[in-house]
Length: 186
Image (cartoon, rainbow, N blue to C red; front, side):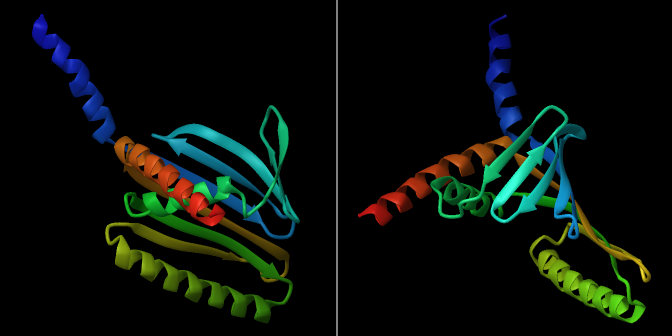
């Protein structure tokens, strides 16, 4: 009976070290300045909302409520997010990244030139990612609408990270952002 108590710390350690698989799906329409963001954890929908961007405001809307957020790029909250992203960037393992886009400018020649440039830029970006994360699966999928005016882009991204790395990165980013804020106030 006494050895059963060893399962509790063993279970906690296993939970901290096992990777958590996140999948993010983002879609954006440039003409309407609106899009959809959906976050999955182990294929279970965690966050789902529509967003609209206008000036320095983001309007978030889900099935239950609508809220507006004012963007202020000099706030300490944004500094904390930037530090957290820089801390966690190297600890994540990219599983796959897929880019889907649908472009139509009304003129077939101009549309084909723009789509070719988008393909080249996406492949240059993916080459840089592939050099840093060689096991990642990357893909570009395009749909060209030669006679319509459309501009939509969608991204499907899957990463895995352990819970320990998330907690460690967050604590480290809080300490570093407070240290930077204290240095700026001096």
